[in-house]
Length: 176
Length: 264
Image 1 (cartoon, each protein chain N blue to C red):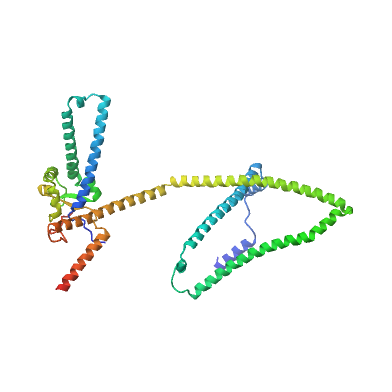
Image 2: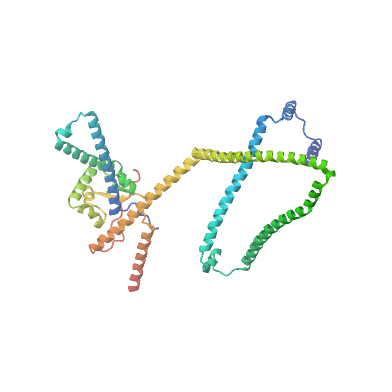
């Protein structure tokens, strides 16, 4: 078994999987909320906006979804440094001193998310080549994402990496 | 008092006999002895218990025999499908047989041969006894039947035989009823005992606790597996991207990792 990576910068795949889980949670929540609102609307028939102002309804729903998504990420980051997806994957957003990020940092980070996505997702891909595994949103908000659990690679891959490193060492020694 | 004196005193007391019972204890024992008379309820209980034992034995035997036959067929089929060249694999080793193994095989073989011989001989003995009794007793019976002076004895014997047949027939009827009833009783008892056991197990707090812990452990193990896979994925993805961009593979991150705040 490889050594623990706890406290080290979390990589792209872990963060992508955590983000996907968060997106799934948000989608399910929005769909459930939309269904509840539409059902309530049909039952009570008080807010008769769907027939009268379809554009306004779409705008309202879109804004609501955006606000909900922003609130989800910002509040979770600021409150506990982890969203449910990050909790499941064992990664945490931290500030430069390793502590919890502020509300402002969380807001900036979320805006950075939008920026990273708008630039053809290059801001997210930056995690793969940055030495501290920071995306653009991390750099903007001066935050890091680290492993919050006793992170280890799977035994098979760790062994393969270990063998590769040993092989490299041996070849270096031989050539020297 | 010295130790020897105390022992002597104890021995003396034990020789004198059991300690006297109080009048209350004496009365209780007398009441138990006097009133020990089996009433109808006790008799019914005893009958039910006997039926349960008989039925249980029959059902268990039938189940065992049925399972044995099925296992025997399966084992025989497995033997037939086994490659003869791999016969050594049945024993579990390709190593040459040791003396102790050969001795063990000899003993097992002798046991099975003795059993087969005993079965054959017992069958032969039964057949022989039947033939002997037929050969010896048939002439006697014929003579008795044909002898007029023995007619009164014969009449009494026939009456006795008729009574015996009636009793036997009654036993057969009773046995038929008791056997069927006993089987039903045994099956019912087994089913109810199983249900009760399951109910008790299902409501046992210790078992619930154990299942909860096991489930939590399984869930945590699954999560750890997913996490470990994604950590490995992190390394692989970076290697691939760095290879594409012709960057040097990174063994470790350049900067010291930040310290995780554990107070959250």
